Length: 109
Image 1 (cartoon, helix red, strand yellow):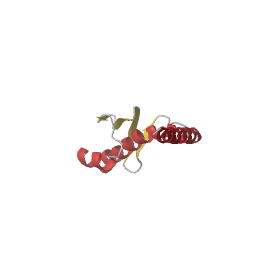
Image 2 (tube, rainbow, N blue to C red):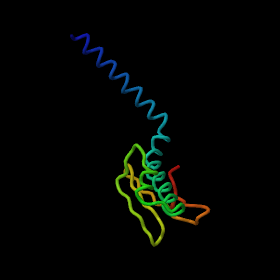
Image 3 (cartoon, rainbow, N blue to C red):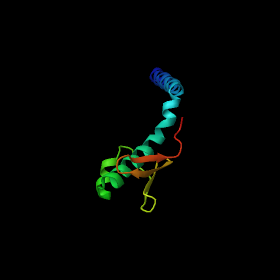
């Protein structure tokens, strides 16, 4: 039984170490991932709602992803959409019918 527990502990340590090394090597991409969720949802919903003119339920279904969003708001006066997903908030604003919408503000590098 002791050999089995020792083998499990060694396998767990190896997996933990290799996961840490992989995360360190890919930190740039892992760090950008939370921004993708809110940016994609706000941009796609904005284009669907303001540029194409579809209904709100249709656009929610259109922009939906596997990772759920936390907050959502529509500003009809500014024609903008604000979305929070994975604790990152992004706002997209309507430009015109031909161009659609754009993300307001800088994105992570």
